[in-house]
Length: 262
Image (cartoon, rainbow, N blue to C red; front, side, top):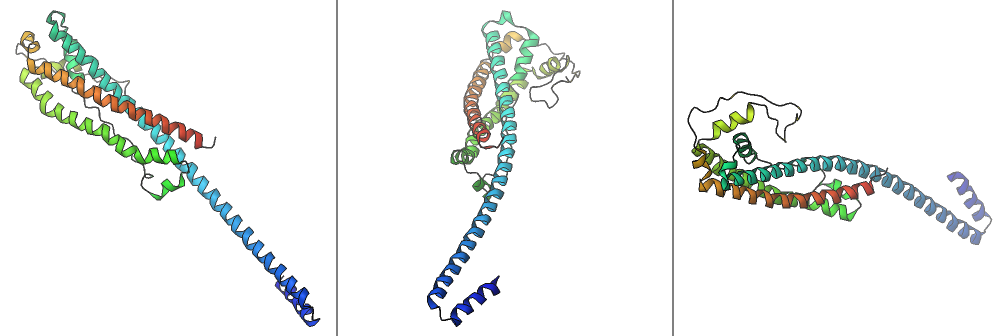
């Protein structure tokens, strides 16, 4: 091909056709430029296709991760709601001791010492070059803010976990109700909300204490009443933050569904 063009140029020069030679040379340059532009366009198109494939892979990965995060978050919200219900039952027994049902009393005590902590999947996208593959700016903004929003929930959970360890458990031990509480829990079988296997109940025999307990004294304990009220406050605040975080997941999921090729 190059020999062909060179032969044409030589013939034009040998025939002193300078004008035609210049026109031909310009045309040849234009063809070369067009060829280069076409090659660049094809290369850019191929690169765009590769980036789109990578973006789709990332979006599909995020969809799975945020569905798992949503499932776990809903579970933690449910655990706190169960603790709120249990707290209200305990307060009702404190206010009206004659309505006390011993198994329900012990079960409710267990419900408020559980420690619901949200631990979302930590993906390898946020804070890396992969984030640049996502073209939707709103989605990028949500993903970038995710860690700080999760921290606001985890911060409250950490405070409750410490309160549970340092205040609630010692109070149970001081009142002498811990052994009977766990006896009541396991004797008929128990499967917690957060269990991986929710179908199987664990049964175990912890004999009840031989020491006599005075429910009248327990229900009149001012510290216990205050602890239960504090549990309600902790769980209400944390669930409010968790519900806001859940709404954020819904928004992320909607954007992912819009961007993922069906």
